[in-house]
Image 1 (spheres, helix red, strand yellow):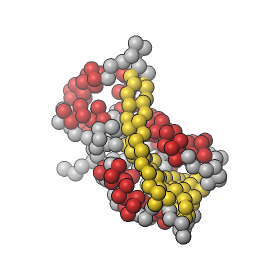
Image 2 (cartoon, rainbow, N blue to C red):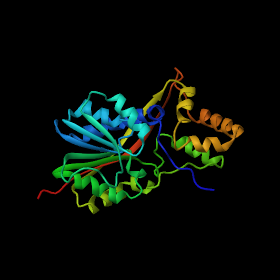
Image 3 (tube, helix red, strand yellow):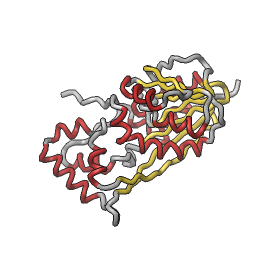
Image 4 (cartoon, rainbow, N blue to C red):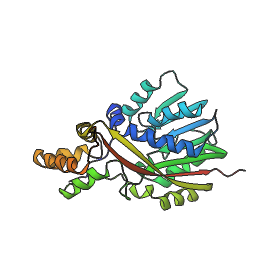
Length: 263
């Protein structure tokens, strides 16, 4: 039987499942990146525009070009950021439809592990950024067990239904990211760990949102109602609420930045 593919076609569902996590990590990432105002950005794998919105709020760019392979995600992004200096189009991270040195910065926010050929994706970002410009990314530390829904994936594995992993999950490791950036000829490479926390109003809110994820939903559908209920109870026991019934836990991402060499 073929392994189900991870697809993000529903911008609204992605917003609850991952958009909030993306912005929490994105704020920390942009503080570390400290980009100049008024830049031209390529947001590669922009999804539903969660990170693009942060760029517009925090960095006052003159232009953001978002590209993603999901028209459903792009439709959400276009509606979310209507009348803002952002343009979105369907496309491939390994064949960017931009000219050489067209941008001041290029970024992949929670994307590189979905790119089938990460080295090509990083090389393309380097190609479209001007000399001295920045190429950066952050990615969940999935293999380090620090993905936002890692606890759920662990419990699913214990019940005989291991999670779906992105096609290039190894690319999210710090050493792999460094090798990719160096291989693309980037210089002044720096990395850091980004750790954040998210709070859900109660367990039922967490459970409802967790089930919508494209890495989790197809596996739950195959588990059967009995095992899904067992999974829910295992997670309820694992995620202790505070006195107000809220569920809070953390996740971590690996971040990297480098520059295109000056001519």
